[in-house]
Length: 255
Ligand SMILES: NC(=O)c1ccc[n+]([C@@H]2O[C@H](COP(=O)([O-])OP(=O)(O)OC[C@H]3O[C@@H](n4cnc5c(N)ncnc54)[C@H](O)[C@@H]3O)[C@@H](O)[C@H]2O)c1
Image 1 (cartoon, rainbow, N blue to C red):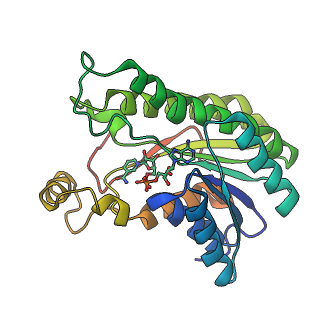
Image 2: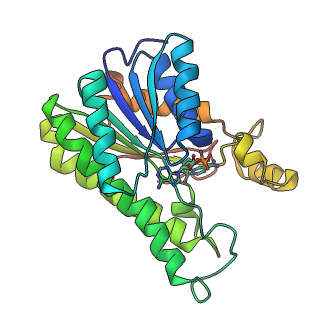
């Protein structure tokens, strides 16, 4: 199905494996997309690819944890495309990912950085996006979380905590601004493979991830997250708000 996002303007904060897929799908559904990342060259490259296939997109340098930079991104959505209807906050710091540290060993500067980018950054993005969306009479906020928010791992404490924080953010926004036409939801991906992920993931770990899923045929792809994002951004998702939705091949089944 195509054209479900015709006439909408969406800021995707955070490109990369999943973010590039979000931008491609949203533009493919007819939205004008502002794609921002600290890796400005990647965002520009993906936006150019979208534009060359007939879509509307601009790629910009964006530090999603920097108040001024987010303000500029929202201002660009207004000046370039006339307003803002959707924000997908998708970027993440993975700084505590490789350390193997538990709570006793975790350097507190790493904890602070994870919370600054992954939790506080999403708050800042929301504070800038909301007024622009309210001006349009409503809109949809989508946040990318992670199955790590539920798993109780021995490592990656700061990552998991930063993602759980976003669930509370979405519920607050959904409840507070629902009467004004705003929806806010979270997508919690399972293991989503893409070239950047495959570059660091040993084959046997990929097999173990697959084994943990209910669906055994494959791991997730950016397109799986983008499909859920497109629903949540679209008017077809207009009765869905305040939810955390796992897209993980059935790895985690919450009541
Ligand atoms: N790939 C997976 O298996 C998986 C699983 C669960 C959750 N997630 C979540 O999905 C999202 C995307 O992950 P991915 O797999 O595409 O990783 P990725 O590394 O390919 O993309 C992350 C992007 O965020 C950008 N970024 C980092 N800090 C930033 C900042 N301050 N401002 C703007 N951009 C910044 C990076 O430059 C990168 O392009 C993340 O929120 C991640 O936590 C991914």
